[in-house]
Length: 318
Ligand SMILES: [Zn+2]
Image (cartoon, rainbow, N blue to C red; front, side):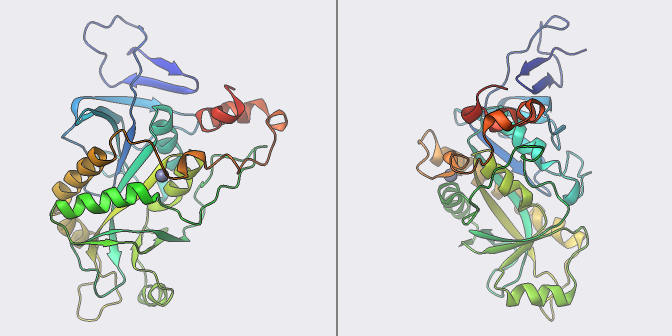
């Protein structure tokens, strides 16, 4: 048994016991201010200094991958590979609640997400980056809230992405040499199949600019967890609407994505450096303040316990 430590309801086991640790000894828990969730092709953050990987277990299950915690320019960063280290998790199977809960429990206040998307607009070319400011939810059957079982909250989601983290990502990806589109509407579909041609044309008529499979429910959960969240999206294809263009395929996505992975990492590092230790000026950190409908006394203790770090600030330790 590797040594473990428990923070409330989070169980932490290092992948390898630290040197010299005795059997069963408590581990000094990792802490991080920034969380990075990497999508297809973005399965590691090799630039993290003193990186250590931890297996975490949350009340919502285990995250998609071990969580790697290390230092980037003097800031502690926790990294999760969204589809697992060997890309073994379908978009609809991603344990988004466990991922966001684990980051929150480590102390993360800002989450940077990186993902591949299809373009629904002529001028958003493959290899460009888009930092969206809106989403349309076409997913179904995904657990998209930490609440339930006797506890109700309705967070505001009119502006689903944090403007401050989004701005930092857009600036940093531009510095990394990628053409960037600031703002845009991302339609999130369940997949795993890509769209039909009729759907692709329909999303264009709706005014959507890019299409992906993973930003939801992640962004909703980050809002409930009072974490800033923004998504850096790399365009890999024109979905299936554009005549004379190759239809999207997994091969095409991976081929175009691999060319941008290094720039994605550079952009994430640049955004973290520029956000630095600046206090948050956005409203993300108080998202639950006006959202909780149920009074603490009415919430079953098992529910309060499961919500753990999500509501601790309002309801105290479970
Ligand atoms: Zn924010």
